[in-house]
Amino acid sequence: MPRSIPHARLRIESAPIAERLERTIEDTVRRFGAAGVALGVSGGVDSAVVSALAARALGPERVLALQLPYRDLGGESMRRAEHWIEHLGVRSERVDITAMVDAYEATQPDMDWHRRGNVQARARMIVQFDKLTQHGLLPIGTGNRTERLLGYFTEHGDDAPKLQPLADLYKTQVWQLARHLGVFDDIVDAAPSAGLEPDQTDEGDFGVPYAEIDLVLALLEAGFDEAAVLDTRASSTALDAVLERVVATRRKRVPTVAPAFQPTYHDPTAFTDRSR
Image (cartoon, rainbow, N blue to C red; front, side, top):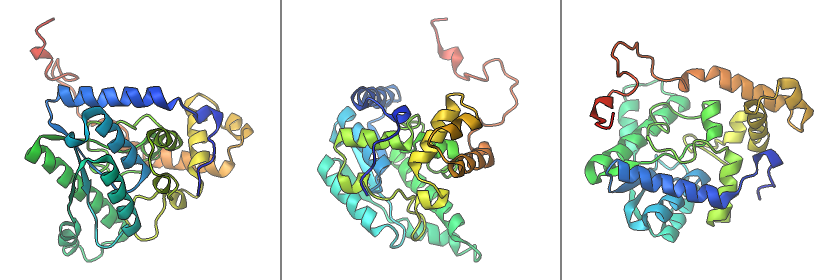
């Protein structure tokens, strides 16, 4: 269904944000000495936006769009992805991860869809990082801030790439950026889904729409207390859902736990800086 106008607190100026993200992609690729970037393009809005930004920043010939299907999941989203990839003119490759996932599942007779989804996400990262070895292409992520704050991602899957252009934009802001970049309506208006199990949608999992979730997150991050949040049009259902998920998934957002003993722990290559 068409996206509604977001709450004023969530509205963004898309043009300057797009320009900044394009510079970030270009600068990061240059700093790491990569030949370009590789990313999964699923037919969802996040990967459509990142692939568009990368193509604008680097040129389509330096972007590898990976389609990484598992069994027959996401047939319609894969068709959307194909049309978008063709529109951008980027390089593309299709790698079916079914055999990879099923080989592990064969050793795990009690595998459920939740576990299988996590294995799929990590298998996709195996392919994406292999393209770094094969072609010198830097893996680029497509996760957004809403997913990160809610812990709605697979550890060592979606979060693995070092370059994450959308990591500080809420989902509703990604939709706005998509409109600015000319992402197709059928991609922007599709029900968001991780595509890791049959008939799954993000908002079905949350029980509330992204518009409400993002408003609650934006208000809480701005310092509003729970009572003040409820004085807006945010519902108690959305507030409860956000707080429950943020608390339950905290471990996904903390830095690696490693006791520090060396003087350069926080920057282990500081000794290479000859300007000091």
